[in-house]
Length: 191
Image 1: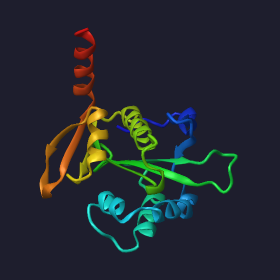
Image 2 (image 1 turned 90 degrees about the vertical axis):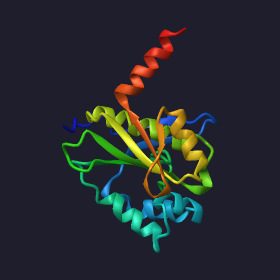
Image 3 (image 1 turned 30 degrees about the horizontal axis):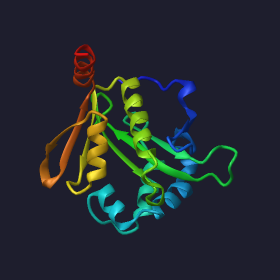
Image 4 (image 1 turned 180 degrees about the horizontal axis):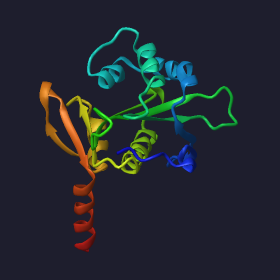
């Protein structure tokens, strides 16, 4: 089910609307300290939105999780400072996880450093992981968002996700690729 990652997609440079440049690349095992540093910048609200509850040792817990991904079912992409900037810093991470290797959908999660929000990095990371999910042969991605996380709900809507009230007072957002492509074709055909 999982399509191999193309060599040319392993890392590339992006430019955000305000001109900031970042390298996007896949998480590596040696990223633990950089991830822990990124997650240590999380505001209490961002940590709550990210885990949908409080966790002691949030930064260490999240860093450990991302450096031990199962390559059969998970992918994580980080946005880092440019390769020529040392020490390298991570500004955001996006992740998809399938329940099992033959699953045709994955759950996503995304986080940008709290001190670097509203620059468009989260949106760009989401478009990147959606492309990655498509390359892996998945049929869609799903996320669970706190109903008071209005910025994430807005971004999901702008990306074409369909929202519905889920369990435990969460909003489930889903992007079915075939359905999205059909809606897009209809919108483009109506002009």
